[in-house]
Length: 417
Ligand SMILES: Cc1cc2nc3c(=O)[nH]c(=O)nc-3n(C[C@H](O)[C@H](O)[C@H](O)COP(=O)(O)OP(=O)(O)OC[C@H]3O[C@@H](n4cnc5c(N)ncnc54)[C@H](O)[C@@H]3O)c2cc1C
Image (cartoon, rainbow, N blue to C red; front, side):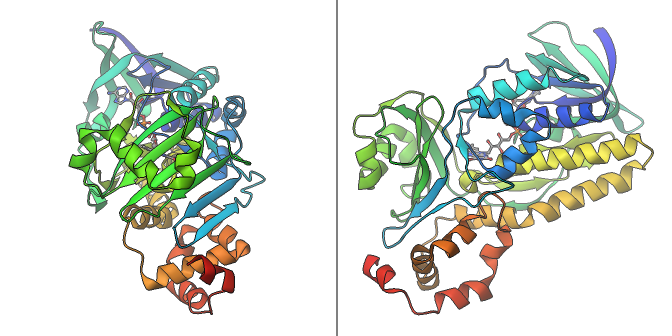
């Protein structure tokens, strides 16, 4: 055993949620050790859209400018095609940002980590895997781990050890964090980035839902690449996993508009995927420890809100730990942190689950979508859920949905049916 050092907070995991936690705490004067088992640049399974609400939180520690410099096209046009109705709209501005970015995680995570390690108060150690926690008097007071197979080190934290170590969180396992609001495994997902995709008039993020039980996603991304992703329940996962490329191509051919764009395309990255997975929330704190990001709450990626929710949890956590350092009691402050995390994410959590169901459309939903297709203002309002402008709860306001759906269907929407 070598080297016992003490920091104010130790954060395990240095991608989006961990990097944000470290940066926001350092801004409050904490000395933070940020530990990451991989070495950047390092890929991970995710092909994210970053909406205005996500960029807003990144701006709080200077990382929005870093992301702007990654040269991704500004995606203002966001749409869904249902076969019987096409709802495409310009994103309503979220605090001035009327666009989303689609950026490869291998570039995004490295750029944010390189930015955060320069913030005074943050020490980043890459290639360091945490293997155990140090407990004293039933309280977590540090971590054990090693860098690239070197000797085990003990590192101590005055205020907290934070697990920002992803959905399979070793920290959550070591503290035995309970899960709640669990949603059963459902859809699966495959994606890859392609080059030589025919550009459209305006860079866009399109989700095609004309195939029952499936969605095909096409997002214009950084480095002149375009993401193609399939997600769904039919064909079943076992069938799709035998040949994901064939499954993706089969879906693509069923959407002529997208197939035309990919006619001369070449795959630029390996195909990545995700087997059917559960959504969950985890108990987000205990004596001396806390969780954030996917470690604390796992959303289905279909609504593109995982990173935002992780960053927001990090914001709430940094606020709570600052209060504790300044004299507040641990238990009520952390209880309030978790209560706010749950309250703020309630609508988004349910919305992600409903969207992940790839359910058959009902008479009501078809009528509602036709109205959205015929009324750009209404479409913009509802699509504002994606970037946080419209509360996700609005999508569950059955009374409002009924009021809209029961109006006579406009002529042009009938013609499209
Ligand atoms: C296919 C797909 C598409 C998605 N699309 C979107 C989208 O459009 N928009 C969006 O906002 N979100 C999207 N998401 C969700 C998003 O990717 C996650 O919410 C986000 O990656 C969570 O970030 P995180 O920092 O919490 O965890 P992660 O990104 O999982 O990072 C955890 C880190 O912890 C490190 N770690 C783990 N164990 C240890 C250890 N023992 N010691 C040290 N380090 C450790 C890991 O190496 C890793 O780097 C998508 C996800 C998937 C799978």
